[in-house]
Image 1 (cartoon, rainbow, N blue to C red):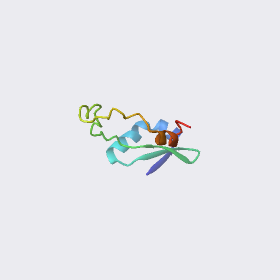
Image 2: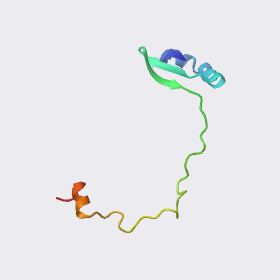
Image 3: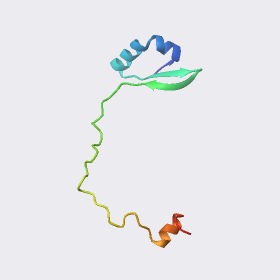
Image 4: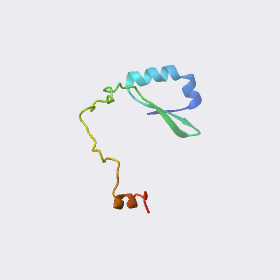
Length: 79
């Protein structure tokens, strides 16, 4: 894995991107001898989760947010 300084990577960014895409090998960019970031090939995801996908399938009970005295005391909601 290549490790470059920020200055080196700024001047060679286009060729670094081409190299990472072509070879799949990541490049580490550092500052003062310490690794800071990693340039890696982008891999599109599966699209992630869709909001609302479970709408109509999950139900909460009417007393979902009510606590009995013991639970309220344990949570610090009551003395």
